[in-house]
Image 1: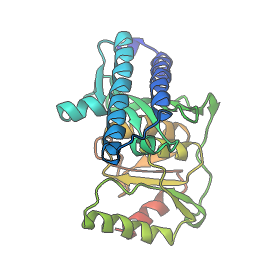
Image 2: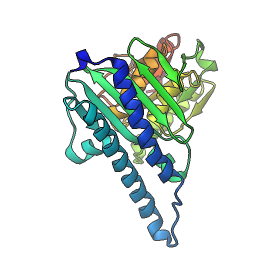
Image 3: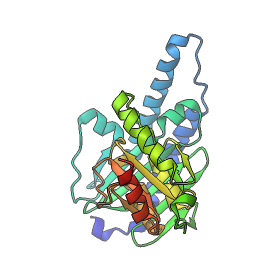
Image 4: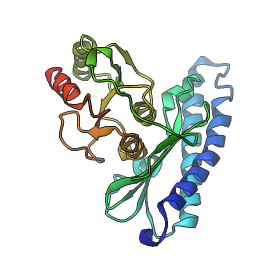
Length: 275
């Protein structure tokens, strides 16, 4: 059971799994994704993503299940196939085998494996690994956050106007959703230094944790697998994770905001004004 295992053992196992899955992603990433006939091009790319996704999730879950057969598991691929899996208080591994699939298709190097462990529904261990840039972000509740073994901290920025903001446009392209998204971004652009959309929720959270980004919000992302690991890493780097409305963060809500503590109130106010 979780009580008898040390959290650092959980982390080591997750890192091993992430590194092995990283090899699969790296191989797929550098494969030629073009074919002769234009009509098949999209199909080939999508198939490669699906194959890579599934292979990574199988590898990660098999690795974790060998070590922790009594634990629960929630993954993007399995959940998509079997419907939403309810998060219980049991130790639960929550995995996104390939975050940044559009980036993967285009050869844009912001892709990662995200492995989080919740205990009592609280994100407790987090591993986010970008195998293309060879960056490994890790965090354990109460023990700090690290990038490739070196401690990381959130930025000390206290002014919105000097802050770098990250968000995502999302995948929905109906007019009302796009208008709401771009109107909000338009409003925020007058209050911050600049905007980034890197295409990975997990890596955006790690950007906050490492001080590369000052502000991040996203709504309507895939599910808890996008945020389970990153939430631990942000908190352990001295940051805060919350609902964009300012309420407490709910891992199952598909709504997240993150920043350093100095910017939280200002950011929530700006987000509320941008609605």
